[in-house]
Length: 169
Image (cartoon, rainbow, N blue to C red):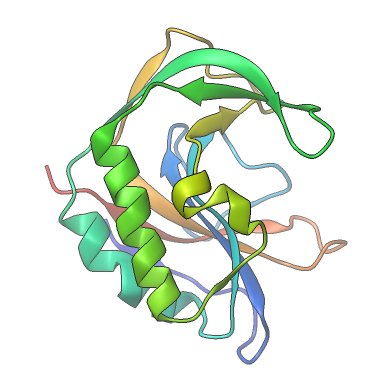
């Protein structure tokens, strides 16, 4: 299940996101808007590159079990409270995964674009996308984490699936 593909050159502070897969994605596919997913690690910047991020997180992910996501309620996020999301029910395994990934990424020196959204500020949610929402009461078992690599704005599509790592069964 593990595979990677980098789209941006080295020695650039690239942006990345880690997500629990809800709608299927394929490594190497580009999107202007990501399919439904649960953000497990908000956008972060790194000079290290995709392979270093995979190396830092792979064991944590592959030694974790699939995670059940349950939508609890709809709210608005963002600085202008205009981003529709569905907050997820508390899940100890998911929250522990987030903290382990947070520590591992800190260890390779990443910079978070919104530090208040990670660590103690993490709030598990699924953002409503053009293709649909993760309505309250909906549940899904996430079996993998994918790493998204962002390209500079104006280069459509701007989001590429750079890696996918599966949980242990």
